Length: 295
Image (cartoon, rainbow, N blue to C red; front, side, top):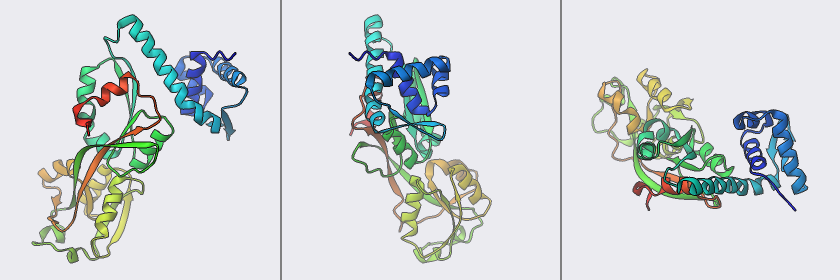
């Protein structure tokens, strides 16, 4: 009879998330030998390994990838059982792992999390900020509970829920020739020097869509942070397509100018990502009850 304990499941999940028994043990306040024994006993009961050992790291094998979401669900249900029994779920507690792409994580985190955090102060929020591609990958490997991204995501295992509209703007320093020209036309952008986000980001995808509508220019720099791109444009290194929310302060200070480009479509959607096969426990369900996430 298989008798896998919650502690063994915790070790399995933490090793899966961190790729290391030592790191998993630290997160669980266990000694490394104790964590190793718990994992070994679980694999013994399953009569099969759940990890492949690769270059000093543990990576889930096919069996492990199949079992990870089930282990996470069992742990969440176990925690909810304890809460319902002792407190009747009067106080929402636990950990919610949220992934946000750069625009959301750096400029709209208050809109995304503010009301929930104020209403549920006992919930620990773990926020990972990265580009859209990385957040989608985190959803697929179950290291994140929910994602919020600004780019299109198409994967059969991911549900995409619209959240809100977002607007970008082509910006330049005030002394740039395009900033001084009236009645801009697409042809005026011929040979323009562009500063772009890195591949995999939603802002990069939008910028490439915009560039496809303009005469050929030159990519002079690729940077992985919106703030870095903003500073590069302020320094006169090129022009860029950036979220309005990220450049409002610089435009108000006169450091940047938004170019009037009615011939370009600079709109996009911010969306919530959910794994279709992941158990949605009490924490996630309450988070999703916010009216702003309703379709």
